[in-house]
Image 1 (tube, rainbow, N blue to C red):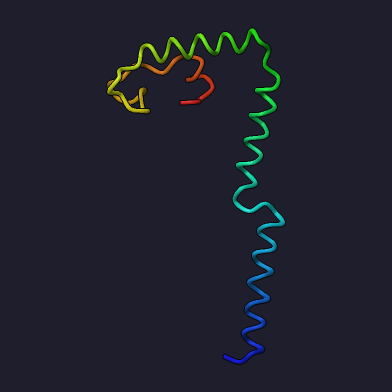
Image 2 (image 1 turned 180 degrees about the vertical axis):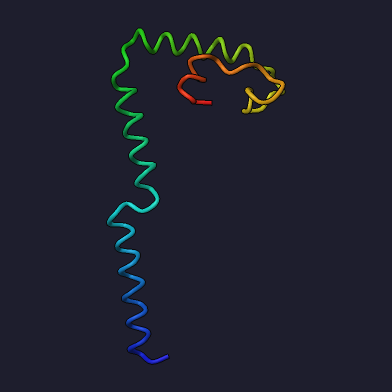
Length: 89
């Protein structure tokens, strides 16, 4: 390979990597989702957080110790109505 071809290839590679970094690459969507979640969490009041805390305690107390993360699978407990409506699970 000639020096010119190598430099052209290297320049093209640098341009592609630069474009990916410039436009956010695969992390752009993750960052947008995290920013939306942060905005939502910042909008919660102390009362909302207390409701979430109590609900989490209730759900954790119902979970079997041997049960993995997928608590809402076939033959397991039903998906809570608010999560089903939001399609969270």
